Image (cartoon, rainbow, N blue to C red; front, side, top):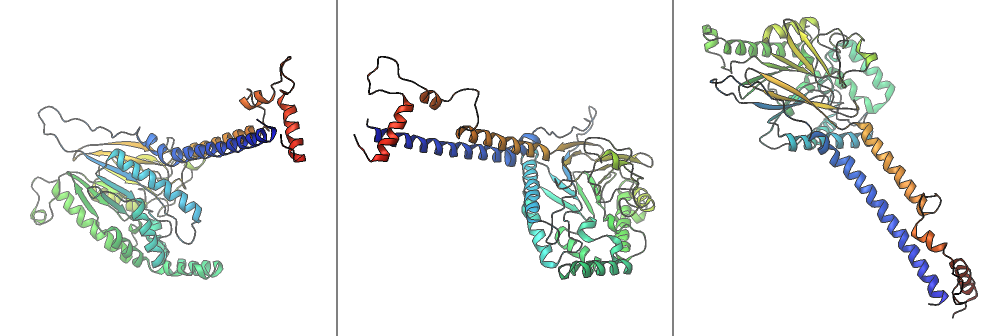
Amino acid sequence: MGPAQWGQGRQGFRLLKKSLLIWKLMAVVLVALLFCEFLIYYLVIFRCAWPEVAVPAPGREQVPVLRAMVLADTHLLGAVQGHWLDKLRREWQMERAFQTALWLLQPEVVFILGDIFDEGKWSSPQAWADDVGRFRKMFRHPAHVQLKVVAGNHDIGFHYWSRSCFTAWCRQVADCLGPQLLLLTSACRMSGYTVQRFEDVFSSQRLFSRKGVNFVMVNSVAMEGDGCSICAVAETKLLEISQWLNCSREARGPSLCRAGRRLPPSAPILLQHYPLYRASDANCSGPDAAPPDERTVPFTERYDVLSWEASQKLLWWFRPRLVLSGHTHSACEVLHGSGTPEVSVPSFSWRNRNNPSFIMASLTSQDYALAKCFLPQEDTVLATYFGVLGLLVVVTLAHLERLALPFPSGWTVLRTHRARPGLAPDIMPLKDLDLKVDLDVACGMEK
């Protein structure tokens, strides 16, 4: 082989090495994306299992078990405050987590405890329609799975937005922030409109029964107790449901009960966005509880939690066996009154927590069992991406021979090879051959 052909062969070998490097880097990137954006959800959620309810005593009738998945505070970003990249990332995470959980766990009903949207309280009709479309895509589900939603303050607005003083505040904010936020003033005075459009999409149903289990879905934003029109309608409906439930638990009720709606004779489960009144999260614990420095911060009634009066009213009306709530974005378990348990469900969004989770509930007409399913942690995913990035840098530098490897590559061994004594004079070390090839090419010589 002549020097020119040898040089061409070496050049082709270098091109081949470069193309192989590119393919290797692309393969590493694709594997990282596949793991962090798909497989990690299956690996983490696969470890979750439905809790077991107590087995009935021998001879007693077996009761059906309802499997329910409970999540809260998805906070889909809107058109005003949501950055497109943040929106894309968070919605992809929640969609992957929800769809994976549906496929692996096969729940029969899914409850979302309010704050579905982040800007429902002031979004324009077009923005609202867009948000609803994205929600339906993310939380799509088979026909045999029921999805039930309760309203949160970010969906329909804070109760006090309807007051004139807060309306004036909204106008000032809109004037300061520009024309794009003038819709804030509309949001302040149209709380009835926001409630109606929410119910048009997600139903105004307040009572839901399945497999002998009764659920009461409370619009806790309307539990202000100040006689506003929305509050009056909400409380009237809840009182009617309370009468139905109390009558259903009586073996022989008065004539007033006989004409009403008959329900399974089971104490209800309350589903609402605002938690019942508690002073703070000081008694809450666990990996998804509020940070230690925030747990002792006193809660504000009618803002962080329901008022004491509204909480007592709900407990008195329904005598629930369990209360499930959201809003705080952190987990907590408390006992109210004579021992009614309440579980605050953490946020389902990575925008609010590093370790989102949801509740898995196995329910019968007389008993229940709860378990928590944690989702992949944000810092685990980020650490994986940074680790892969570091690997790519090391491999690239090693290929460019700018990083000393602890072991010699095949090409390095070949280049450092020297001719043995006694060989023919036309066989020379590769280093000298490289110099001769370069001189021959430069002079235009051929052998």
